[in-house]
Image (cartoon, rainbow, N blue to C red; front, side):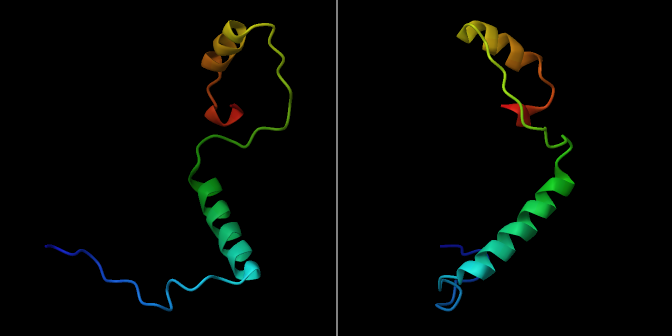
Length: 67
């Protein structure tokens, strides 16, 4: 059997303290924002009368972060 990489050590699998997990999540979020070509949209509410109307609106949006 071929193994790629290395096995995880027991100290790699230990749970992180909450503060460290939040810090790492913030770093990952910031990196993702740099890579994402679409800007983060402002909050808004779109009310459609029917599901079909909503689907038509959604398909016309160039930014997939809106839905």
